[in-house]
Length: 251
Image (tube, rainbow, N blue to C red; front, side):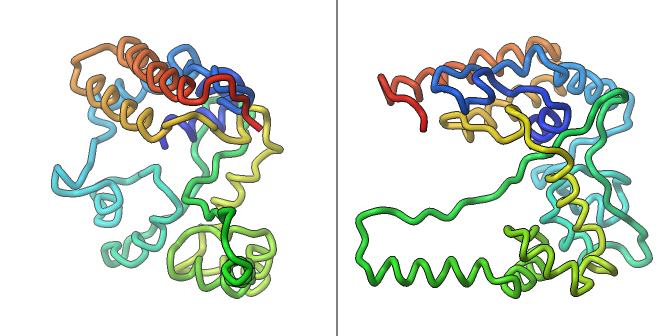
């Protein structure tokens, strides 16, 4: 989510139509925002040996590299906080900070990630009763404490966060630092851009982003060429999605 989070905290759009919220005719535009500068800087730092590419295919992913002290800084999900705490090398001192922004930037909220739970129509009353009981269980602050303790992820409700905070959850290791994720998500009131991203087949666009970033770092294309290709191929994905719903408008 490198592209998505950077763009959000800098209040830069991923796509037109307020990141797709205002219409199915949204098209990508990260090839002409501050994100171009960011990818350019990443490439310069990579060429200078200041950053490394880590993956399981190369024998060690970035979380493992950080936990063993191979890398000094990583940008990753708060969900990896627990993994680092459990696997870090003995005596390693580390902490958590919000994602950096360029000088002169007014920081905006980052975007929440993760899966969603849906309750579908057409089920029996008994099934809905069971679904309601499950959702009430998830909403319980004590469940939030159990969830965050064992997964590293943030609580999904404010009541859960307040309960955990009042019980000193974030005051000491191994959980200290996870509250930074809440600060990042609530750094500002959401703007038309930072409220989220609603683009059809977005996972395919993410895959295309990965392909083009690999091409950029392998010196197969320039930064601008790679991002232009990302937009071109991504727009084709969006166009196909739009054609799936002719004459439809988003709620």
